[in-house]
Image (cartoon, rainbow, N blue to C red):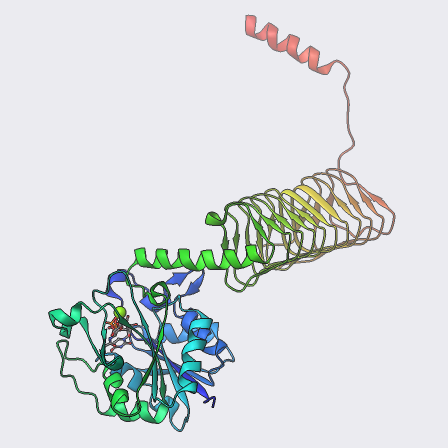
Length: 467
Ligand code: UD1
Ligand code: MG
């Protein structure tokens, strides 16, 4: 029988060894707060209700997690004083009042657990009649962990390292601290905990001996690397590396070429199509969607950006909240800011900055330009050094270009202004008035040429110097 699932994620810890103003469970791990990983896992397992137990910096932890999991069944319970892991889980009692089923217990500082491992744990719980299932593992060094005590092969309890005798310290099988418990059993067992131990705490681990006495304990063995916690910034970096390797491997197995995976940073939720090639030192942050046959050159940084099939994003370009339709060419050194939309086949080149700008199909802005608050049609040519003057110091205004417009180099378009289809702006113009269809607009002083003037000047200056 499959019992309904709820989850409790312990996030109350202070994390003194982080030596940081930021709570341990909010430390960034590949662009996400650390506790995001266990909460996401619980939701992936279709937990009906996930309760994060908060304590240290409760308000900050709540605010960050609620924002990250908007509209998802995540709630919070406060553990005012850290009286041990048993007390922490007990803090979720009211939040789960009336819930009948299985309660999964996870930690905000254990980010490497994989869905498959937890599925095995939940399945193990559902397939047995025991009120408790738990994860054990055999790390190279069991120092510090709680050890599994077995009698005739059956688990009878856990002894914490600090409470263990010399014989018990030799046991290599340790408690990962991850459990699935029947709700009724859990609340009953927690109400009976007593702080009779070396640390004077309410140990969650005491529910293991309680389960052994009333129906048994199901044990799922997992790889020790998956259940490693995070205590300091060195461990944080080590866990980040494992996550990064997992993500990169997934993309490589799906047909993405990573030229230098060690320096490729891809957020957990990014999608990338096959035959896409990603150069060294590329970072693809949250909310990116990359198509197939895309090339992303060295050093590019993309966030919340969509890149269509067959695009080329050349080195050192920075794209933020942009939409790039198929077959566009961007960079090198382009900066696409929020609200940029490049339609199919558009080109944006070196040192071009765009913001809230739509460039129609096949439009080119290849060198040194600022295009902000701009609606630009298809097939336009935006010359080097073009600037949309969108800001008067108080308000922003829109520049609108039709299709097939040619903007000569070094022109300023003072918004609000409209240039209709097929119009031509002469180089070096400052355009302040609308330009009708197919017209030429130029606004620069007429050229004056004085024959021999430069030679005469040299002679004069030379004579003056000799004196
Ligand atoms: C716990 C287990 C131990 C296991 C180990 C695996 C207990 C008593 N021991 O030990 O058997 O081998 O995990 O890593 O459970 N927390 C709170 N409130 C509290 C206390 C803790 O939220 O009052 C949180 C901590 O922030 C941390 C987690 O619970 O995220 C684990 O607590 P910790 O004190 O680190 O337990 P361990 O000593 O690691
Ligand atoms: Mg710990």
